[in-house]
Amino acid sequence: MTRDTFPSWPEAASRLIAVAAGREPADMVIRGGIWVNVHSRECLPGHDIAIASGRIACVVPDAGYCTGPQTAVIEAGGQYMIPGLCDAHMHIESGMLTPAEFARAIIPHGTTSIFTDPHEIANVLGLAGVRMMHDEAALQPINIFTQMPSCAPSAPGLETTGFEITAQDVAEAMTWPGIVGLGEMMNFPGVANADPKMLAEIAATQAAGKTVGGHYASPDLGPGFAAYAAGGPADDHEGTCEADAIARVRQGMRAMMRLGSAWYDVESQITAITEKGLDPRNFILCTDDSHSGTLVHDGHMNRVVRHAIACGCDPLVALQMATINTAAHFGLERELGSIAPGRRADVILSSDLTALPVHLVIARGQIVARDGRCLVACPHYDWPDSARDTVHLGHSLTPGDFAIPAPEGANTARANVIGVLENQAPTRALRADLPVRDGLVEGEGEVCQIALVERHRGTGGVTNGFVSGFGYGGAMAMASTVAHDSHHMIVVGTDRAQMALAANRLAEVGGGVTVWRDGRELALVELPIAGLMSDAPAAEVAGKAAAMMQAMRDCGCSLNNAYMQHSLLALVVIPELRISDLGLVDVRRFEMIDLLEPDA
Image (cartoon, rainbow, N blue to C red):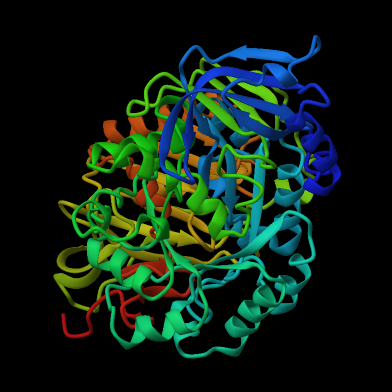
């Protein structure tokens, strides 16, 4: 049943009471399981769950009194009955999938609620794109709550997006039924400096009684952080160390610890609970960014919970951080996040609380997955042509578009270089003395070229720079229209001719990711919707993504999930150095800097 047909508690209350009292039979009973109670942090053997109208009527030692001839009975056989898992902060677009195919991928892993910020599509299609994501989310058999994107552009004056989100857009979206709050407030300098637009968005969200998402991507825990916390964000997922997590919860924020496809920030922060003994109620687990390959092969929130347990966290505490803590944070504790009367009947059956194998998944009282197979339809939205025609380069690119002229008469040039860090979103601001050949500055060794190609308005603009850390060799290039958050086109390569081939190929197919070497395409992932997503099945997209990552390895890259690092090279709100359509950005100071040092 969709969000429009799923009964609210007032609509279901009379029947729930009747079933709990034994006056009416339940629709479904899960019998003889271990009740994982995240309210009391207990495992209670020998319990039954009675379900009616998609909600939990009661949890009792014996629900035989409310079991009728038509009641569907599921024998738990002593398995753990766990609340459906919740992802507190994530971006569906990062899975390269539409909401329908993302739901189909995560349902078998036991995720029954996600809180998604579609700010990727907002940068490409504006409020109309957010509405498309919201509307497809409403069709799904699990709970997909949308946070209205807050920052498009993420850093005004440092980048140009396809569309701009306004405070009026935020106020309008707060009236939509599936909007649960404001997406991550990435413009943290704007908040700290009391920017009127940012404060208006926060005010509109708070006036609607909804949650303001945070994003404080700075190691400075002094006055800047204090000012940001005063601005109203209720959570933050950008912490990378124990001190970050502690600082956030002490200031009344929820610390969201993420394990995505490339962000490994749980182990370094969970010691705030396991060693320092802080109250775990204010800590939440999330994924942030998971690509299709991770979803298909490794899991979703079950993967995050297993990882937290492997880092020394008590299994019940880890489950709280992926269920009730999330629900409470968004004001939905009476709706989901636990196995308790009145809540949506979102339940997982698992035989092991540590390894967390997912044998059966029930969402809103319906069996949706069994032993790794999704058993329900995940309806698709009818995406319009405007969402499928978003790559506009202005002209066919040539190798000359990627040339970087050297200072006149120079034999070498000192360049500012973006340094990629494995498994982390931040980069390093590096400098390198690079050779000059035929009047052009060339990459050398670990340093290769990077370019941002404008693709929203067809200006033909290309911003060139240098990046280090991928390890590429030979004549190669990789291009992607996934380029957080402005989502222009990012091209990284060692050869200008290959860079032109890769960029033109993505214009031809309407967006995606492609890898080229020696004039030949090694891999292509087509992402025709906004240049960000495919409406093909997750397994198909994951197969193409795996081939893409193998092609990156074949070109010399050994980084874990290097594609994720590639996709963030234009994210001008995470330090230290990024590239935008306006030039090179020093995110430590939020200033544009020259690519080449003038005194080189």
